[in-house]
Every structure is written in C-alpha cells, then in structure tokens.
Length: 503
Ligand SMILES: Nc1ncnc2c1ncn2[C@@H]1O[C@H](COP(=O)(O)OP(=O)(O)OP(=O)(O)O)[C@@H](O)[C@H]1O
Ligand SMILES: [Mg+2]
Image (cartoon, rainbow, N blue to C red):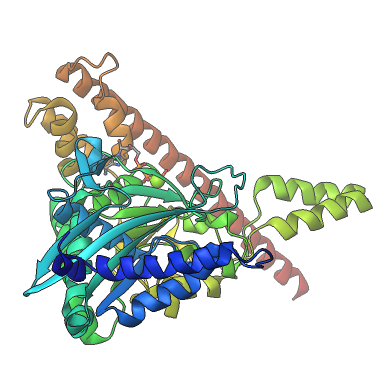
C-alpha cells in the first residue's frame, strides 16, 4: 500500500501505533513480574500515541445505550444508511429479510470498511464487533456481542461532519429504515425480549385497510385526511410548540371495528404498533419505562381503557377478586389476608395521573410522530380528564353497520357491487342494529366457495331475527315501564288516602 494512501486511510498511524505497541509488548514480556497484561499497555499507550500524531478523527457509534440497554436509534439509522450506500462497495455482506419478508436486504458485514464522498470530503465507515472476553453463560444468543461503527475523517472536516454530514446520514438512514423495515407489533404482556427490552415483538402483518373497513365513507375520508396531515406536519407541530403526537379515542359496541381500524391506521401510516396491556403494568414508573422504550413512528394502543382503570385511577376489581373478598369476609383467616396482601402488591398501581402523564407529560414528547389510541365500549364511564380534547384530539364513534358499510363488506367478501336483494337489506339495516362483525360473519361463506345469493339470504334472516329480538325487548321495556308507572300511581293514591285519614 502506498504511503499516501496509508496516510489517508489512517493505516499509517495505525501501523506506527502497532510498532510502538509491539515494542511495549516486547518490553512487557521481559518483565517477569509484570502486573499488567501486555494488551493493556497497548490499549493504554499505543492508542494514545496514534491519536496524538494522527490528523484523523474517529467517532464511535455503539449499538446499545450502556445505561438503558436499548438499541441506539442513531446506530440503527447509520446501519440503514450504510445498508443502502455500502452494499455495492463492501465485499462481505450479510443478508436480512426485507419488508414483509418478501425480499432480501444486503448490508455490510462485521469488520468491513466502506468509503464515501460527501461535499468533496472523504469518509470511512468501519463496522466492528467485540465479544466479551469473559466466557459467560447466557440464555440469550450473542448477548455478550457488542457492535459499533467507527466514522473516520480528516480533522479539517470536523465542522462539516457536525453541522451537516451526520444529519444527512441519520435522516437518510431513517428514510431507508421506513422504506425497508418490517413493521412490528409490540406487547408488554410477555417475557423480556432478548435485547433487554420490556416489550416483545413479532412482525405486524394485519390485512385490515381503510378500503376494507365498513363505515360511512365521509367519516372514513375525514379520518384518513387527518392522519395524513398529521404525518406530514412535523414543522407545524414544531412551530406551534406542541409535541408531535395525536390522541384518538375509538368507542362503540363490541364488533364494530375498533381493532380493525387500528390495524388500518398502522397500515396507512406505516407505523409500528405498541399494544399496551395496562393491567399488568405495576406502577407509574414502569409505565414511564415502557414509554421511553417505544420508538417514533408508532401507535401506542390501550384497548378497553374502561376495564384498565376506574375513575379514581385504581384498578377495577374483576369478578374473581370480588368473590375472593366475599370469601374473606366469611372466613376472615390470616392466611387469606396474607395472600390478599401479596396479590395487592403484585397488582397494577398505575394511577389516573400516571396515565395522564404518560399521554402528555414531558416524557411523552420523546421520539415524536406518535399516535396514542384508546378503545372503549363505554365512553360514558371514562374520566373526562382522560379524554378531553387536546389529550384525545379525535373522538371516533364506531357504530352499527350502515348500508354504506354493508356495501363495503359485500364488495370485500362477495365481490358484489349490486344485487336485487340489496334493497331489502337496505330497508332492514335502517330499522335494525347489527354490528359489522355480525354482517361480515354472514357474508363469509362457510365452505369458502362464494355463493353470493346464499350469503345475502343468510344476512337477511339474521337481520330479521335481530329485528324481532329488538321488538321483543322494546315490548318488555314498555311493559316494565308501564308497571312502574302503575305502582307509582298506586303509591300516590295510598299517600293521598293516608293524608285524608290524618286530616
Ligand atoms: N367496521 C368494520 N369493517 C370491516 N370489518 C369489520 C368491521 N367491524 C368488525 N369487522 C369484522 O369483525 C371482526 C371483529 O372486529 P373488531 O375486532 O375490529 O371489533 P372491535 O370493535 O375491536 O370489538 P371489541 O370491542 O370486542 O374489541 C373483524 O375481524 C372484522 O372481520
Ligand atoms: Mg377490539
């Protein structure tokens, strides 16, 4: 290798350092009672010597954050940037599954180096891997491996690097990540992930989209526009001084498409989903930890929020717990009390104020570009503070199936845009409450061979049954109301009678 080239790539300085280190190693070997490992001399002095004389600067980017043991976002962005820029140059590549596992993505392997030019300057990127010297037993594969990138450049480009080059790399890298990455769904309801995170994840491949969602087309378009505007509004949020996040409250009876809507939103925005099971979060501190571990471009979902906290922020008691309390009252033994204490210790102590902090406290702003979605069947039971506008910016009612909704389902399930039976169904849908889930169930052929007529007739029967059930219920309610009315008139007459006697 030419001296000039060696100087440029920093290898001359490395070899000078190595020579110095070799001398030190030799010296150390002749010290019979030398207390230090020769390699430590090299690390301590050899490296100092190299950096003292070298006109090159090195920046190291580690894969993991030492304190929180979380994968560094900067490292991930650099990895993606190099994946895009280095795969043509590097001779040793590694292959990973690309988006939706349908393609292979190539990136530079460990211990590889690539060079790139940026605004007339040359930069060298090298990837390294160190394996802990202590041979430790670990349940997790490769948990003691540490990867990092080193960026080398001439010191005259220091300003260029800090002002524009690193920003360029990180922004480009993030874009590449979004285009190539597989979307994931995370849950806190599982064992710890191998990278030490409190979330475990799988690839998110839910097929629901806004096209397949049965709901009023106007409402659908409005929601889609709101989401797309949000995604594009980074600068706007910065300008008005608000964290780049938005809250959605989806409410409505079971089977009206709340979860399907969340999947459709994730697919539209290309975001990851964090499905937060609030009832197993021990306390507010753990809730904040979970929040910190979420990344940007994501949706944080708390389903059935009404079942997770009651109005005072205490966890609701379920049926089992109530039964246990009753038992305790009967037996009142010390053993049961002790068990109860243990259970209480384990149960969630997330409070309403902790949850409010989670939604819009200072920590909630980290990462940005986040949607927080709550779903509930009973919106009236929620604390107004939790869902006030500004916290939950958009309240979306998911309601029973309309005729427009039915048409979407008929197109999805039966490939049908019109049929003489549509008019009958239209009329019945106007008089009857049926969930899109029930309509979908009827339109799904039991044999998976589409027989549109059979499916539509099945739906008509279901609608007629639902209509009859509703009529009976209304009759019962009316009879009950009439009975109450009669009783109250009788009581009134009694009172009057008694008053007459007194007089
Ligand atoms: N609006 C809808 N559009 C399309 N399909 C729907 C819709 N609503 C329900 N479905 C169908 O019914 C199934 C159940 O719906 P989903 O789980 O989204 O309801 P949900 O409102 O979340 O119910 P729950 O309150 O019980 O969680 C879905 O898998 C989907 O096939
Ligand atoms: Mg649901």
